[in-house]
Length: 501
Image (cartoon, rainbow, N blue to C red; front, side, top):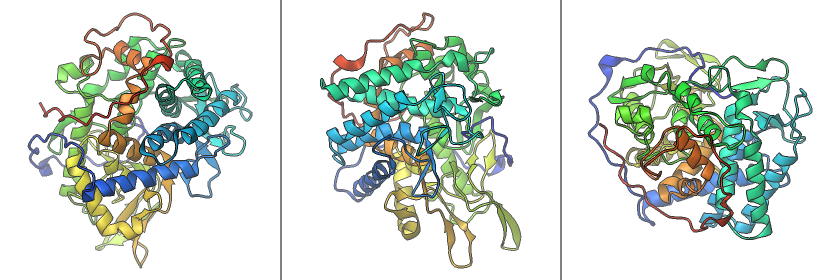
């Protein structure tokens, strides 16, 4: 299942005495002009990352593998959610035609709608509108009996589904069908069924074990699941679920490496929900109390990770102000090597991160941690991408952009370890957040979704791009389908991020 804040990890306490002074408030940069070296670099990375989704996806079913190229035979519904969004980006950027994007999107939504939903252990793609985390890429059915029906992977899928509904606004039969299918898929998800008696969402279910004991509580990628559930006109959640999710926030609010923020150690937890939803200037009750918004919170998390790398308490090779980034990613494997006379242990795939909640660091750097944070803090991300590519590019930058991870401290006698695969859930934040930084496309499309707006309002958000008076108590009403929405995309540049309070 997805790694999350409730995952128990071997951790080391933060070295508070080693924390540097807080950096001066820095406003987020506006996108650089076309033709500059950084613009060319970012444009090339975006194009290559998009190509991963286009090449990896099955044109017939729309299923996208968890990793590619790879001998693995499983597809990830989270990858599909990112892919559905990628096709719109590709059409806007001219990587593919709009007709190609429509064709691939329609094939994907048709396949998802027609796939069997039932409680059998082997003959289903999902149940109660939710989907299994991994599917067999040939049959589209649950990959094996170890795979759970996943609330968060379904949420990532539904973000892509709602993007497709809001993006394809044309008055043509295929685009009308996309909107109708997206509406049915989203409204079929039974959030109430996945809700525990304490109003929190379970992380998943299986026919063999029923609901798994882990649940979504505390700042993490689970944020999107609650917003989607609150916005649903059928089987939706009540605002009490948002309050239940917030209940532990104060336990993770505090200082870490020069920043005061709501901690979540791996950077993916700060990226996934933000990849689709623009939280700049939006405040729920908790954020208002702390005089912060969740965008600024994630921006501080990025700065804290850079400061952690500069301090480098683990003394890993290569860490610096322009080589940093801890998140869930591949690793060299479960192994121990002698480095400078000391045994150092390394990990395979793991939720690496640095925060007050835990620290897990074996010297493995994931480029998606920095690249997927470009919309939060471009002023430190751009130099990082530039330096990583210049120093390690021959080993870590290829046909589909940056490989999933590399570790300058782990050597095989000839060179350092580098991955040879790309993961959909790590490629996704790179692509979506680059486009959000360059044009605001994904954010602006999602602002047209009545379900996203309703979900935010029922969670108590106001300010920013939302109306001043939120709707917090009433049940969601069936929303007007986006068929009549304006198809023009606003190409807004990022305004300056709020200064730390």
